[in-house]
Length: 445
Image 1: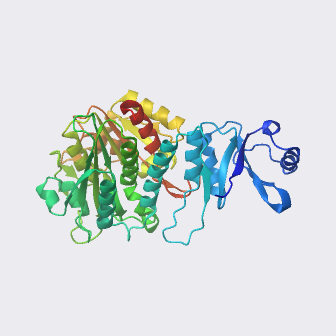
Image 2: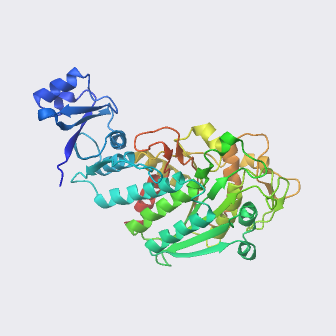
Image 3: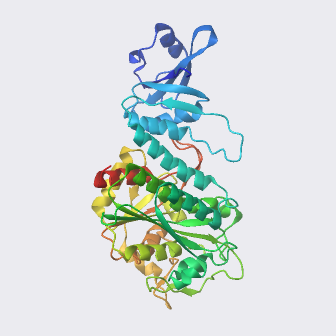
């Protein structure tokens, strides 16, 4: 086996305490290395060989900062030395930074990490696998991940983890009372469907996950611009992240009854497309006037949330790439979180801060419900006035949840426009680590 090389982590201003040889210390000083955040410096060995690398942790040590090293290093085996903080989180950060999506390219081998002795190897593996699953699905283009292919991926996911699965598709959605899922997806050449997965002992606390699975979003008859459509392969990012979270839950054998609901559609344009001005029935019995066909995600989520709510779970969580307004408010890296349980929301925000998976609580501001009024139906799917788009989308969804003990909604972006530590550019996981940390605390593992 190839011997590993040291990746020496140095806090800014602590170079003299890094335990370097006099020659390497002189080399670092000559190259202006002082532990600057994200700075990587190769250390020369004998006969021109590489002896290792220095990596700057900055003034405040953040373990996931090691993702920058994972992204920058080439093929090789590395072990961590020095001040890198929590070893499990450092290993997760490094490996997530080393992520590459190479399905369509001849990729080169990336760096590998020898886990620190005190790291929780099982946690590193399951959390990296969860994030990688979400990233791979989001990065896959829609010609290879339409509704049919996505269902096949979900069936394989369920089978590999011993989960029960049932799928309701096409006109069977109408017979089973999922009219909005059917309406949104009926114009596509591939039928709309709802995947329903279950795992865990039936008498355990019920936790249900719902993920938006729009495999591509043209905007429907209210068509998006070319620029607006360019990243719409990521519109199933909520479903991808829900599957990643489900993987972590099952892998850790948390003591809960897990249900996963994924409505899968392509919001296409054809003669059968639903129209602005249509009034749709919903599973909940609430009638919905269509103010904009590009606000389709909340429609399919509403039917799935209504189904989830019928068994009054202890915790109901949905994740969706739902609104551009969320990105206007908080940018791509900080997903807004809405919840009917403020204590739970605070716990999730705190957990996210602790594992570098940030979330920000936003209000379910009931006065804004007036923006969703319809003159001919119970509610409109698009708010008037153009204000508070993420809040009004959350308020729309809240109308379909009444029995769950607690509900959490994450309006994620699911995409890294530029590389960040542990998040290469492209499809990305958001909310998985924060949610998993709270679920693990609640339900053991």
